[in-house]
Length: 63
Image (cartoon, rainbow, N blue to C red; front, top):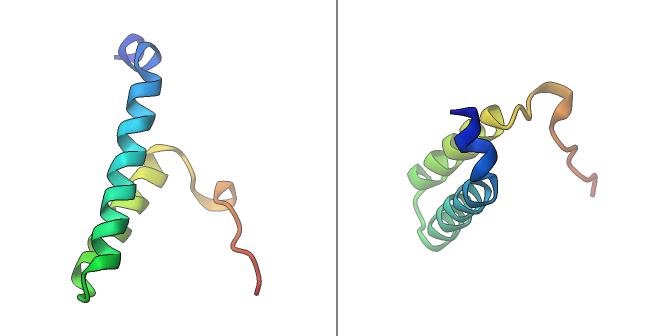
């Protein structure tokens, strides 16, 4: 499993980025809030898998 991840890391990163980008476009184009919740779930799941939890998450810029 680790060998597969190491060998295909670029492909996996491209796939994950494409999923988030596609979901973001879908959420932006549709007026309902339900798809926004689905996108939030997908992003949170990917953050968890990438170990972006707690203080490892990027801080939001203050306006």
